[in-house]
Image (cartoon, rainbow over all chains, first blue to last red; front, side, top):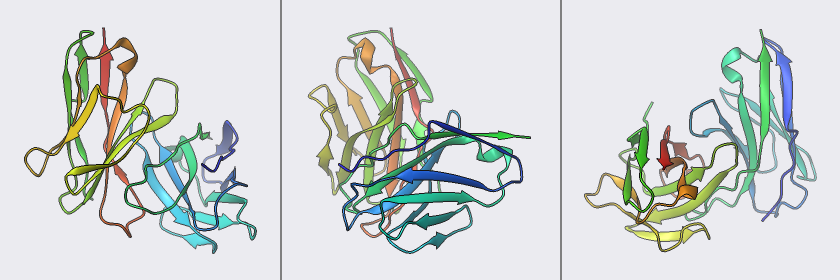
Length: 111
Length: 114
């Protein structure tokens, strides 16, 4: 299994952009990079995924390094509701496969 | 937005007792999963279920665990004889089809074994 490395925690101010890094240097060539977040007392929530190109959706943007060994989740304007643990995880896309979660990054948002 | 519903939200049981955790998946979803999260630890994959059979299971999912979809709607996780170390949050997750990359998780059942 590809191993991921994320900072244990990050802190940001409300309404500022947040860049959450993830290293996944052993990711296979066909694995997607998925990001999930877990709000307090909730189950994980899908945020975004990508393969090679940068991706945008209503929640966030995902910037993927050209060599695919790292990626960055970008929250363009953090709110207090974005305070959560953020996980990056490689995923092959097969229906049977379970997700592998690491410890993630605990994002703290200061008002 | 469609939700995955789990019941109960909290269950307390005595060691050695059987428990059944219930999940109502999103109606048109085809893939079903159980995960657990021991307090302060990572979310861990337990089992995936498709077409009324187990597709994949982790080492955690031993003979004490079983899953089924008895009535075509509810998806259940049964722990036959609970141990103290089974205390955790248990999350159900579902996915629409093979090409649907995002999982939808429920809010979880907190299981406390005493």
